[in-house]
Image (cartoon, rainbow, N blue to C red; front, side, top):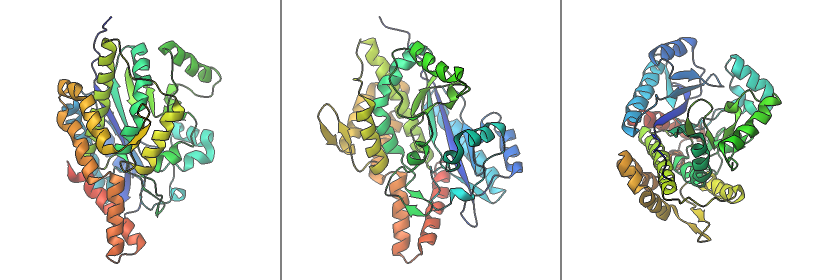
Length: 377
């Protein structure tokens, strides 16, 4: 029997790194910067685990157009205030050359507890991500849609890759961030759950044992939000460009609506085991958009040119209903120009070929990331 249509509202959270405009290295956020940003962005700005990181979050947005306006305001405000302290935000998941050993964590109870609980693993958390919330009020429906949405997590990761460098070296990966994050407990692809009750019982087991305080300490690539009636997609690298971030948000929203639309016709997306999905997750992490993903039905690796055409066709009805056709079509532009990881490598290689040292070339990458942050504002 058809169910009431969810509102499919949007919320976007992004984490940024702060760099010194002279050295291009990471720099801790001065307390005055934190206070000014907090006052200007009431409830939408917060510190992160490391002192060189900050986080913003949009309001609950009715559509992508509203998310664009809010995200543009948030990015612009952080950039303007940071400039007064000779700093600039970058929206990349790893800094090209900074060393995690030189960073210090934020002195707050939450982060002090994390450091004590997760020990050496959490010290390497010099990474930033992007989270997309889509409003689905009915709890059982959230679980059902989440189970199916897992299939598309590698596609989202591949489009978002922005972390090819780590501590001054090209890692060979398009997304190095996940190699750091996956060392934490309760990360990676979410398991399948039969119902909201099944999910709650599993979480409550850890709470009862005092291993976690609540479900916010579950850091899967996709989860029911601990605070909101939403499905929270967490697999994406943070995007240097605003418009790339909005394309990813629009795709998550459209895919969620598409899966709900199937349910109204008593249809659903086939569920695959995490063993198979993790192979595509790895391919996205390693190659970004250049390696293709496995089509499990066809038993073949499909290049992203075809995958993006398929995705656009798959969610066309939903993109039109949500008013996001331009954002969805922008996937073709991302494929044509390459991911941020591809662009960062090109900047680095061009600088080296022009005679720069490796360190100067990495500095050119940081300058590029600063420019990208401001490009769509």
